[in-house]
Image 1: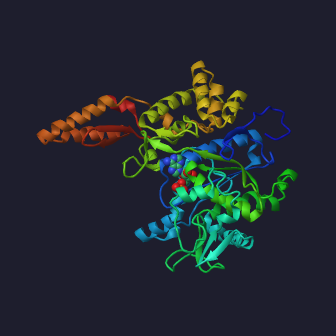
Image 2 (image 1 turned 60 degrees about the vertical axis):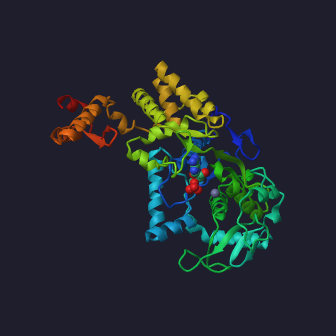
Image 3 (image 1 turned 120 degrees about the horizontal axis):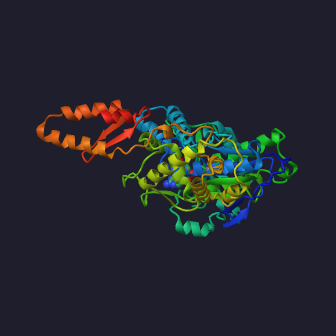
Length: 481
Ligand code: AMP
Ligand code: ZN
């Protein structure tokens, strides 16, 4: 939509972490809305929790594009490809760092693509931004906000006591009392954080005024956001008169709420102090964390899995997206198998209905209004349920498209018939129990082959049998078994 269109657009309201209130979203320049979201550290497959901010901010990106026009929104999300976790992974595996980060980056894009996430306009990698980070650090030193000590450069929180801690609502003194901060002899204040650190010869490093080293984690986001969302549009003459009144300021900054402190607090300190500003982003948005079956996802609890694991088990990306959208982004979200099963059933029905409608129709204004009310995705899903019940396939389809649940085509997995396979699973399980006693496995082998011929994947464990339809599943063949 361009500004010449007369179609009424809803007011977007967003909960701003900075003020702890839901506020009307007013972009600096409606012709060029600018959003930055912190991206992944690329050393391994993205776990399911990592996908939550991707989906949440993808929905916001879609909403902004809908309201301001696809060409009037710029979204940047970084890849952290310099990090000690990556170095450790390389040392353990004997593989080159560049190989690990390139592979993991592509995995991330593939997995998030499967969840229906659009790619941001810019996806900068930290290693491409070393000169900009060095320049920003030099600037911070010149302005008295940072100091070099023993090959490190540290941000001096005491140089910005008035601003540091405002986002998370803590004073520097509270933080010192409550935080497990690394006390190092070269730090003037224990809360001072690293902008640059020395690298030994076996670690990635770049020449700098402070010797060979590598950046601290936080500085990349400050450097990239400024380059891609301020400097570049400025050079390209894309900033309006109003935007020029807010130098270096962006509209929206997002990420998981685990990043609020210290990462976002530190980004704000760096950006504001480097640019002599009081504001880095007007709106700060944070998604709550994801849990699994009511518990924190963790390797030790055995409930840790990646997006790829789920896709590999045959759970479609749309189903994962649907489950995510059914919980508001500011509430903890619980991933359960039951929800995934229900989501699949609902989506099968909706896709069958939506297939009868044309794609690309404008969504109902009141559906957009629902979504514009602090990204109320579950409200839009409730509306979809009503459209489905009423048989309003056009409104159903356009609402699903707004949520990113449907593109031009209904996904292939929906075309796989939904057949109850439990009787076949029991049959194979019982055949195996019998075979264990008789030691004659011919019937088990016969059944397995027949199920595979019908396009089913056969999964047998000690406790049971699972038959999973694959792409070529033909239920008619089951009758002959
Ligand atoms: P990381 O690679 O750990 O820096 O995390 C990348 C993104 O995933 C950040 O925006 C985190 O806030 C987010 N994230 C990590 N764990 C979870 C979780 N369990 N639930 C939701 N978001 C998460
Ligand atoms: Zn960041």
